[in-house]
Image 1 (tube, helix red, strand yellow):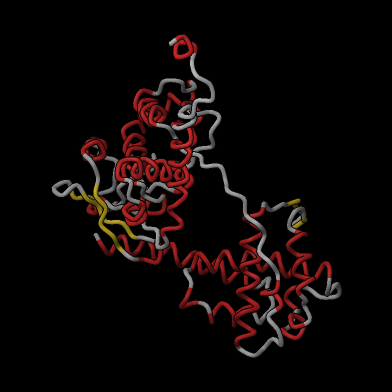
Image 2 (image 1 turned 60 degrees about the vertical axis):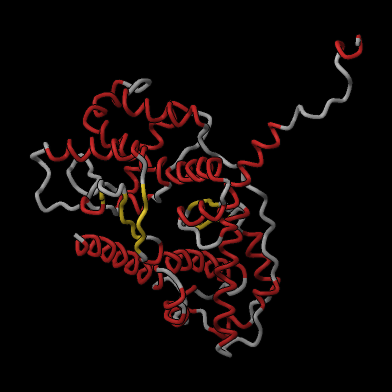
Length: 355
């Protein structure tokens, strides 16, 4: 029911807000004003990431600049003395740093995200006339190099689904559980590969979200918007087999609305889905680190191959900016480069010379 789905997302948001509030206890008091000010323009997950990033930033400032203070004791007057050079040192520091007794490091993308967070903080207080300058805006973002596009090839897609169906290649320990989860796992993998659904959308699905008459289902996208997505006969068959199996399971509570369940007969967790994707992909593609998001990218690539329409791919995947989708186009470009590699002949073949 819709109320059950709303309850699920409300509970998840409540827990995330609770984590933010706990993290704010480790931040300067003025950070509370910042989080209140950006609440209407950001998602709760974005604010959680901001809290994690700012915790590291203020820890750095107290280690390197305000050595007699704790992060909680910092003031806006202190923040106003932080120069662009200080922020550049912070970005460099992220290459290798200690936090909470652990050695950490950030790649260029993680550095860019943390700098983006610091920029948002400075921009907010500068616009409120509480900082004399927006020094974070003077710091250049790290140059991001294109990441290698990891996705499954067509033969690997079939091999992944066959592996989940048969259990071939599994250890004895994995086989012990396989028969209990086989139909569910095939349905989950088929849904990822056949629709490009996000993992958060998948675990949030309820039984009554699936409509076999129109081969469609309802998902809640980022930001809470609901969208109807459509699926193929292959996806329909996998879902129908799983739902039929559930109907014969007397151990499932009658009031459990979730579509995909754990062995404990509760809504499956994100971690469990990640682990099952990893389990099967390690068997069929051991050299690739395949995650649910990589299955989503695989679908995006396959869809672009079939449609040649980047805007259709963006719409189905729920990307607000088509530039986000162009990584799938980059994958196609690789195919094009490979296909034309032998087109240019440098010397005539022996047979032509004889002519």
